[in-house]
Image (cartoon, rainbow, N blue to C red; front, side, top):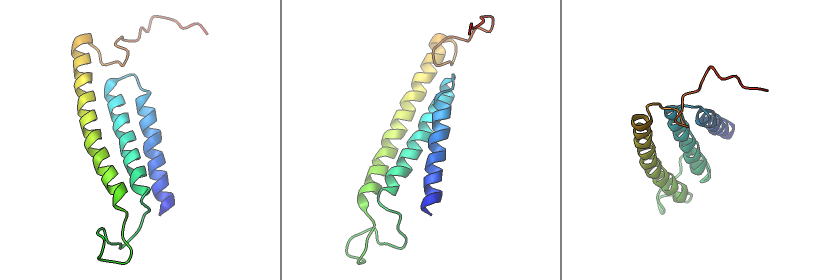
Length: 115
């Protein structure tokens, strides 16, 4: 179970980093979203994966840790707000610059790069 969970987090991180390194703003936003999902899963796993445990004290002798759940809930809210902000910035950059490239310039295919 832990190996599957860790591999899912690793896959999300690698896909997020790959998308962040792209030249278009939409893929950068998708990469940031994937990274935030990976961080949320990592924070949630810090409370140890447990099955059939009570979420509230007093109902069982063993209970699930509520702190990672609260951290993930807060991270989801902050991540949604930051994603909305970055999307608005991307739309504004597209309207001001006329392109959706991260640096604001279209790549010139006529230039030859000397190696």
